[in-house]
Amino acid sequence: MDRIIKRGDIYYANLNPVIGSEQGGTRPVLIISNDTGNKHSPTVIVAAITGQIGPYGHCRGDYRTDWNKEKTTDTHYRTQCQWT
Image (cartoon, rainbow, N blue to C red):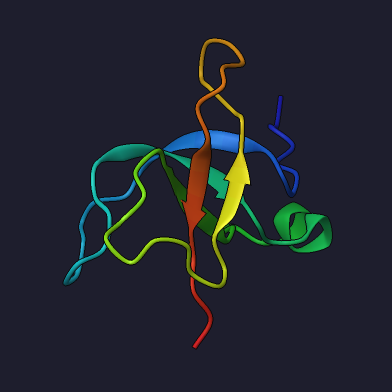
């Protein structure tokens, strides 16, 4: 059975190896590539999710969600993405 990966889904992914200051290790990620691309491509586009707010505070491109692996909590998680 093939897994159907959809935009907005959250998975755990191994983000190693890293280059520079990228986030590494096994972390939750948000699927941001569109469903058509996900269906026909062997790769997907993801954004790493974190519960940490960095020293720069809120940045354009940060999104908050109340997702938690086990249950819904009041902890706000943030996807880490920037557009250049």
